[in-house]
Image 1: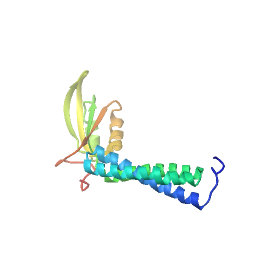
Image 2: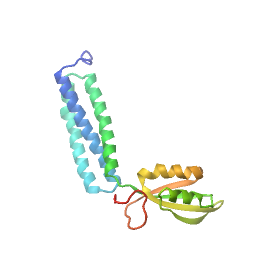
Image 3: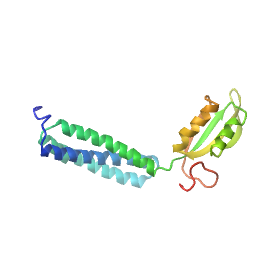
Image 4: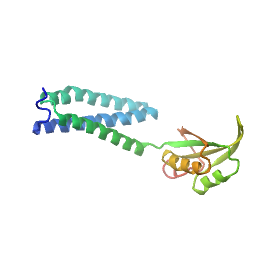
Length: 187
């Protein structure tokens, strides 16, 4: 059974390539389908689920069974694994390109001066500031609307002033008007 595990010929190469493409397509579609589900794009998610299931069944029935018939081989396993990883990577890349994740970020800080507010505005963020009261006293609450890709930059600015600030994010589904950091022309 294991005597052909390292053998290599054109049949093994062919089925390895087919397995690679099939699993890449299945995982790619699956990754994007999950994103469509999260974004409440029901019809697109259902269609992608149908295609993903069809490819998955084809993988099992045709591709993998023929690969096994031609001799289970380390190359087929390797190409399956590489195809899975590439499908996942490509799916994440595509999801980043199609995603317009706009966040509402709340920053809750004990710092009552306007230093953080000024730093964020100086670096291009629109900031709405209001006062709040917490368990231990007064707080400043800053609200910033930005792209998800700007969140790390925003967090770094906040941490330079107040490492203990509480930062929460919420995905915004619909938006109109206002000042949006790094979003002009992308909506």
